[in-house]
Length: 297
Image 1 (tube, one colour):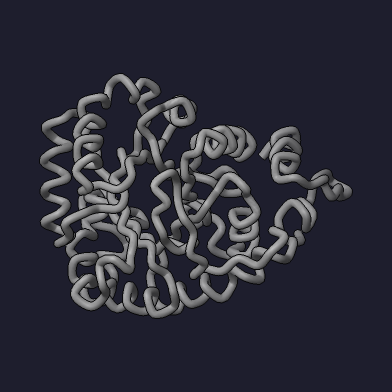
Image 2: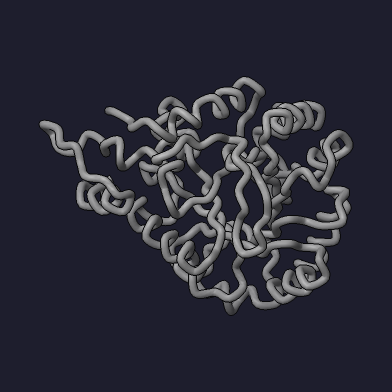
């Protein structure tokens, strides 16, 4: 990250810089720590529809493409079901899935053991027109074995003109929302032009945004993304963070990444794709300390 971008980012977080001999070493505690401890199991109300879910979401899409992911490949249906049940027993009630990850059957299997109304399910569609979105939602409901879906997201949108070009798909989601089949409408952006349209859209209830302190796999540098997310939050839209660990780049700096995400006032909750019970346990244990202690270089 460039020094000027780091400065802008730190000011956005509300702190001053700690300077080292070779320049910026780290943001101070007040920039990377929240005033209160935050837990993975904290129940929040997301967006205008006030969907109740846990601060931490259980992601199933690490390296997710072409209908599979690290989670589905490594764990299979029984393994992910066990992971979901373990997470649920520890208060993690937010499930992050997608057609692209191939994890709908895993969610359906887990719902045989966990009451549907006790979890919030987010899924995503690549549809850009009405016919494809209608087909996707109907198929998703069957695959998930659920009458309703908490959040349906436009997935990995790069088109800066998505408001116009995805109108047919959005009309269908609106229809399903009016019927009570979809609770909230959302988007995950994979470009800055797409992200810049979110705050002024009258369609989006929830934004799924790529955010971490080093700018890896993001729509722009952290300072620019934070600036956009502040606008999105000000518009009353819920914000879910993703790529918190920088697509694995921060796997060995987990506390640093968690402190950053937990301190951001523009992020309500976030998703991380644990690939084992031990990884999920580690995240759950780290979050309260990470939220209240500043990272040091």
